[in-house]
Image (cartoon, helix red, strand yellow):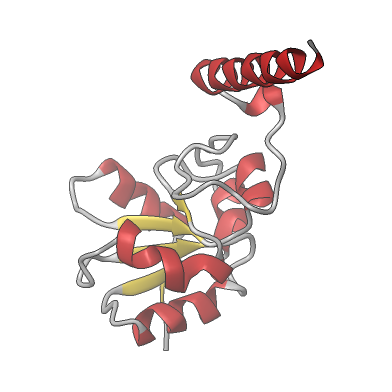
Length: 149
């Protein structure tokens, strides 16, 4: 049996002082459109590879989130098999969170690793990322210009 947490109870946890990890197990495109502030993105398919780095202490309370709350059961069971003891899921997922009128963020804040399932558009990048990209693009142009001489 997997424990559930209501949207209102999770909101109180987020406003409180208790230490826990909020992990969104959707794909990056879904997370990008809206997610709970303070959540970390670890897609379900990456849990086994990224959780030990993201949440190394296995007795840390975890709350998992998806869109409707059904896909997350497999993630919760997997985490319990990996040794995480205190795992619960957001009852109703993002649908319940949004229905309760609670705050959301957009964009790829809180990602644990670069997403492999979306192309990040320039408008979704922060200024530092854009400057790094422009430096790379300029260096690439100079590299090929030097070959043509």
